[in-house]
Length: 117
Image 1 (cartoon, rainbow, N blue to C red):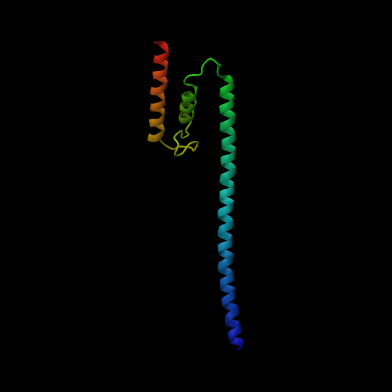
Image 2 (cartoon, rainbow, N blue to C red):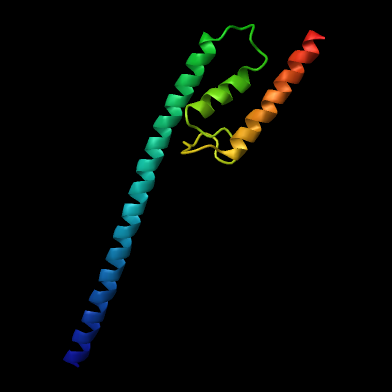
């Protein structure tokens, strides 16, 4: 009877250790997600501040192409402008971003040539 109780206690201790390890892994994962979220919030604030600062510096007469200019500037600063990864930092060129910028350039050029005719 005592041996059975000791065996049950040992088994219970093993299960408790597994639960403790799983809990620690979850805590670490949540902490990493929290740190990443804080970093993204800060980056988002910086981008908003930069965007609004640039908009205030722009002349009000320059309506056509201003959105394109902002996207181009963001892309040149190392951020995605495509719908798949918008706002994320990029390590290399992105075909989706480049395609979007090419399409927008064509539209701006068409609007400019239509206005001049």
